[in-house]
Amino acid sequence: MSETVLKRWDKELTIAGGVILLMLPLLGIPFKTYLTLTIAGLAMGMLLFLIASGVSIIFGLMDVLNFAHGALFAWGAYVGFSVFGRLREWVEADSVLQNFGVFIVAILAAMTAVAVLGIILERVIVRRVYGSHLFQILITFGATIVLVELIRVFWGPNDEVMTVPLKFRGNWDVFDIIIAKYRIICIFIGIGVYTVIQLILKKTKLGTIVRAGVENLEMVQAMGHNIFLLFTGVFAVGAGLAALGGLSMSLFSLQVYPDMGSTYLLFAFIVVIIGGLGSVTGSLVGALIVGLSYNYVAYLVPWAAAGVNIIIMIIILLIRPTGLFAAGK
Amino acid sequence: MAEEPNLNESILKVEDAHTFIGHHHILQGLSFEAKADAVTVLIGRNGAGKSTTLRTVMGLLPASQGKILYNGKEIQHKKPYQIARLGIGFVPEDMGIFANLTVEENMRVAMLVEDEATGQRLARTLEMFKDLKNFWKAQAGILSGGQKQMLAIARAIVNDTSLLLIDEPSKGLAPIIVDVVIDAINQIKARSVVVLVEQNFYMASMVGDHYYILDDGLAVHNGKMTDLVDNDELKSRYLGISKVA
Image (cartoon, rainbow over all chains, first blue to last red; front, side, top):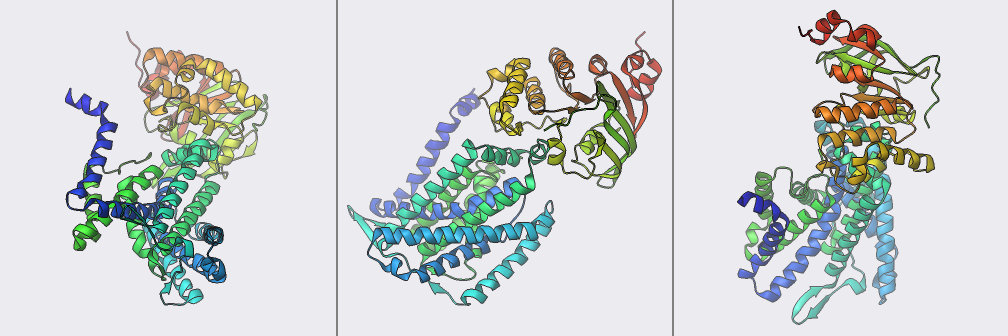
């Protein structure tokens, strides 16, 4: 009886539980600081979503463990860094239009360049190791080394300061709540990307085929769809999202460095494991959990910030081994 | 676009096919053919290689040796999606339903072209399987076993399919639903050639025109289904069906 009631209220209970968990830090954090941390957490979560969604779709559809995703993330950041360097006047201009203009040009350049890189990676390297996770790990790890060394060749081995467009800098003070401008932009980028991905997956035939492929790839082939073309396309989209994540994150952390991908790839895998493989919504929820908990714990117990997400991941794996929103398989 | 079957020849001809799954040699020189105007049933005990045969024809398992001819052209080196585009529909043993997609989305994924002719075939298919119309917007995962089988068959015939490969459509279904599937296959065979893998002898005899008995990856007997129905010795030896006194 109670089990039936629990099932009937499953969704409501989950939402209520989520809200309680979200409010829990209020016990130890002043309200205004809590709001500032929440916005920071949401922004960080959205940026992690950008990198994690690519990893999730690539693994969910293609069953490929792509350890080179972090290097593609770094490439995105560096391509954006170059665009910002070339269009310095736009970056420093006291004009919202020019600031957003350079940001959009950088996004397009980074996503296009890294998507092409992703296509080459899939066609030349990854395609040879479909079906073998061990070889995928080894070969994509090797690709990471090559891609990171290429960054050192093209851009140099040192850390570089990423210049944020003028109008993106600084904070708003809303009733004594400090809100960093760029964090709000990050939140909107995340919401925008999630909406576009969802629209493509739910409203287009191509998206429906991708969702079907996540569930049963063999059947999609037997229905006459060229999965190899689909794989290349999905890999390119995943790489493009990694590039967008890399560029956005570099503006968030104000720096670019050749190894920056490996730091965030670890977060991306935690997000994907929490959210469930192959689910874009899972990646979003997982990323927000990671972003928010990291920020709250970093304020309350700074030394535990790095470990809290590992603990959350372990708890979710124990309760629901397939992640919160696992799709298919 | 499906190729027009030549009624004078076999639409599908498998010659000396060998297939391995891992180190296991499953098909050991299988040969059979499906005539353009008939339902060919592959029957045999568990592990005889029936499902492997359909998966090999579909290109999902590679034939290491032998030829597979469809309308006289070799297809054994083609990829599954290329084989499907020749006009070959496939209903796997597990039905291959996309459980998280709606019935409508399952059908859309199956449609290679969304033109007027496909629309007409869809309407005809939904007329055949009325339950699908009722659950059109529902997630396919909530359908009953029989409804899932209907959806699996509907997806395979919504395109211009000239050859339909169906793997054990009666598996796990209630007798009354088996009759619905029999009725559907009898309607489908007016438009498509059917190769059916079936362990349920009642169903095989109700829809089959020709039969092949498979044993250890080889076709050991074949003939007209009406002859097999009367041959108790063959049924007992290869299918484990004993005559009730």
